[in-house]
Length: 478
Image (cartoon, rainbow, N blue to C red; front, side, top):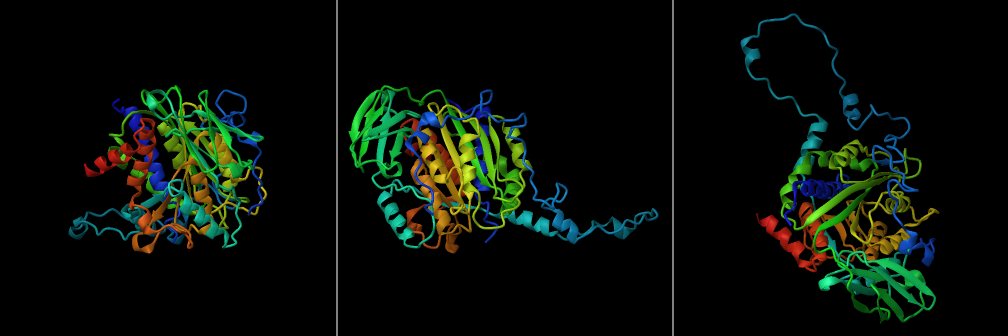
């Protein structure tokens, strides 16, 4: 079906937001959580909040629980990011002058004014072309396990869920196409876990993460059951409906570190949204996109987390994004645990059975792993897997070994790719002990990379994962 203008504008915003915010920090060059109980991670226990029902928190302006206070104490709305320039160069006192007839010299075109620091910073932003790479730790799973072993030898505190023994289940429906949002129940020896398939029809069951017995396990989807053992890949053929035709529902939430390093990139986003229009114009299918965001800082900042609900209203989302102010964040780790929990619980996510659900985490810092929190990020990983939500971390400069490990945990466990900014010969936004080699990924402009990721998600529904890359390549050539 031809993509309509209504479909294109939300996708424009989607791709531009990821590409611009992913550079969030590029301008700046423990295991104390036990696995959640099975009951806490089943699909029935993680129902999304919706407008008009008990538990929904959306306000009339789209901000859940109201728009946040953007500035820390001691600042004001008038003292925004440009204030430093105004204070550094106060305006000269005005003195009225008598009118004169313009002289010959005055009629000559005036010399352009010297650029201010703000002008120079804005010009530099407009000239910057961001590039990125990505890897899939589920495709290179043995390498990922070796990386984890090496990381643990560094003695860096983390929260962890052991992925060893991973079982990959692929569910197909009508016509042999992937079944989006199919409920997959894995049971055996006192364990019963409910998961939801992503756009490619897959789930990943990690026995160690649920403290499961050795197995085997009975895996059921669409009324069809099979047996699986640790480390196995199984296919389940059903008659479940598929999303290959008709409108595709796509909910995309941006989980954004809103600490001080974000100001320049938010500015850049405002002036570049329309530049990616042609990149997505030929993406196949009729896509119903809703966009939202959860922002986070850390304790003692003006707010901990704040969520703008998922909406099909592109203008409302753009207006909310325009209001975002980057501030606070004095220490390196941030409130990622709390933010991820709110990103899953506060927005009005549509039914997991019918919706492609994506979270793009844009950050360069790990969570506060030594802090006791109500919902550790590892528990949110379990909930995301139970609801078929993919989490795509996009790491920026400043990412250290601890941050990379956490970001790759989130991506691998939910079936997504780990994305990172690259800087040519200067390296990439990964930890110093990373096992990622330049031969492991293709370096693309970040726009190219994000367009490809989104296209692949949509192509998966048609059972043609290579189509996403082909569509992107054809657009790049035109």
